[in-house]
Image (cartoon, rainbow, N blue to C red; front, side):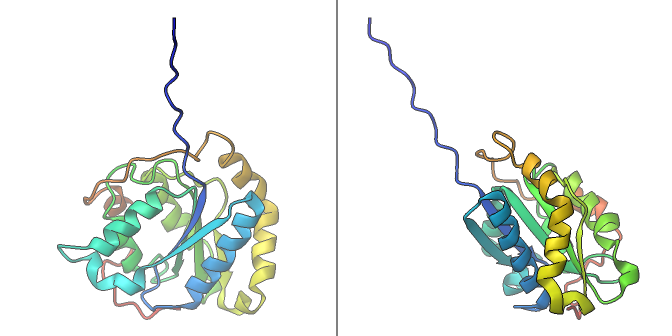
Length: 213
């Protein structure tokens, strides 16, 4: 008797994806997020780091047709780890980031390990990531195993030190969350629609005209 074994699908390579919700292209928020993403990738042994700068297709996010936003959605939904970054705007996150996250349906980020990152001009707003951004990411199905990474404007000059200090506390949680079989697997791209992000992000501004960092 001849037996055959079905081929085993090769899981996709792990990736770290940066999403910057700053409406200004090439912002300091983006640079901080990329620095954090590369350090997280090195910590987890991940080689692939890619960036989604929402400012480069902000005009599409609220349009009826948004092919670049759709491509970005799929890339983020397939990430192993996602650094979701925003400047603090009205004590919350930007309307541009809210509008992008609203494109996902329920559980659109299921299985993604997310790191909220906020850049704040005022230390009093340091909890904006925990209070506003973490809940919407969790409602969209993401795993948020560590506290948000918060960077004040005065700390941008010592960004490496801030990231290292955060990683010393969060690194083991990230490693456990991205362990074998946890998130490195094929995912179904998220559907389009006004979903959980609309409800959980109700405190954020809906527009995309912020003057941000």
